[in-house]
Figure 1 (cartoon, helix red, strand yellow):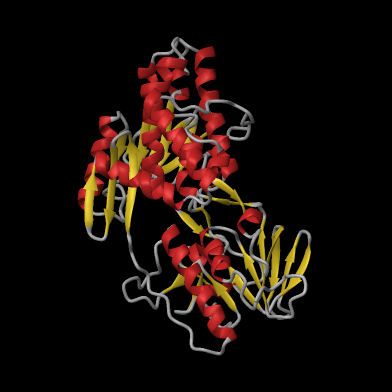
Figure 2 (spheres, rainbow, N blue to C red):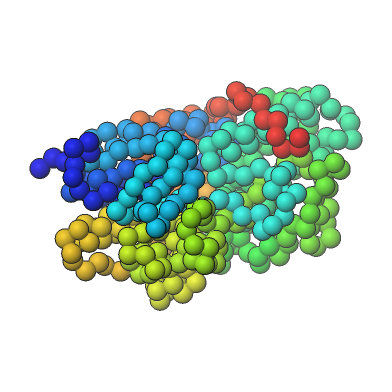
Length: 430
């Protein structure tokens, strides 16, 4: 039987967010007896693990984004609306957006996460971040603009400040971004900016914890640090950022060090992206909503939260909530799809338990750490494994092909192909 969104007389599910959790959920509800509306302020799914490659010029944004309408084009019971959600009214079962209001029978919050600056307004104002494609394009432009500015001020005292790049946060995003910047210093700067002394460019990675990649083993953390240092990245552990003076460019660290820089890339933490109208009493650790083992919002049978926005403590292995990573979001999205159908059939739902498939991070050419099913690898084999899995996780054959071709070109040429400033970035210190 084929269901049709326009003519369906069926319960209505609204999904807020078209990320990992939202996409997996709609796949499970394809051509099922439920009417589904997906709301997102962007009209595309964004593969966040590769955003640092857009920022560093290795990939174009279209390689990691996939139109949400294309995903649902053959899903007759599912519709998409490009809209910004303004409020949820739980008493009237209504979602208010900038294009109108929608009523629901069931609601799923899959809003994901946003950067956490831990209350530091100056750093929030003057740092770069990597949570969206516009962020990645802004960072790409900023990096290239800094190189152009360095050429115009070559020989001045400002050169060290211009060519100092500081990455804050030693998780996968921070490690991968620092490694990409180090490879730009090694391969791009000498080729494209011959008048500059490439040795003047410095990449710093600041991490408050005792080691990098805290979610991985000690072996992987140590190896990642070694790989970064081999590339010339200056890694400082047990060190936090205190404050930043945008006028002098002074970045003060907890160990007493002061770095002069125009570019701070913040990847030190994330927090849930909450919605107006959901009771603030439900916001728990990490700005996430309290849910039960079925991802139901505490106190609501018809409202669910999945992925980064969900704070679940029922999983015995994760009493303080699950890690805010894509695999959790995907698994919860899949299970929620099954549980929604069970609800419609008045069957008992299945509780969620996280299946940890492993973690990985790449540092640079032939340099990666990879842990899966208890197997730990570092170096070349891990690097190949990282590339293969990321290719397979991309949505759409075209995206996989484009990414593969770009990677092959980068590998052969030692260059990052997309070094163009199409949208000059003006906001960091203005």
